[in-house]
Image (tube, rainbow, N blue to C red):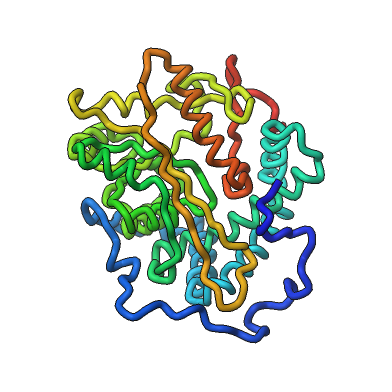
Length: 362
């Protein structure tokens, strides 16, 4: 089931085949004079250095990535409404062309929503790719053109972070892989500085692009293998964004239900919650980032995004790691259900079972 206001790629509107550049344009509502821009209001714990350029990035094996960026980057200077239109087209193209990712998405949705008809799950899958296509532009703009998002965000639950920070406690903010992933970080930084945990990309050039883009958003980017930096941020009382919603097997996780399906669930957040001062332990809460505006953005309108911070998890961690993993999954599942199509269902979330890898994606 997709959100009522979302674009349905299987039923193009009468104007969907006409590029926005050929339609009558309308200016977005004026931003009042004196309103702080995103960059003026940006909060961070530090300004991280960029990773250095390496000459190996120019080798022929990387030319495809360079070509992709050379095509995409100029497009972020188009109006957001046009970017959304291009993002929808990109998402539909990838849905049709990326057979493996499409099948993985449909498999995940069948497992998570068995009560829905196959046709409805297919519409949901298409919308996932549409949202991700738009998310590509949202991410690039968050990195290189952040002020386009001035006056586009609201937040609920901010008091939970404020209260923890007033008590001089660090915060472990449990996020998820939503399609507006990096934009969510940028919008959070309008209200509080945030560090993030990350996993290094397999391709060094892609890792260089992503890491350096995120230096414009986060105070620190902490490698999942760099426990020393993590402990330093926790002892400094920072807010640390960590996403525990992917399947990394059972070496550092347990099986816990996710959308009613047994899923390998990493327990790092549980270990993180034990770091730092015993007198002022980290407060663990969850974050939801959500684009409320229709993806076929009306003329003269800016998009709107909403951030939700949940209350702190009580008695976390407990003595039962399976119960803790189940609680985290339940919280994230409840947030994802606000609009399931804005979560990245094309990841193989259920690739591991109690006895190792499964064959459900074959």
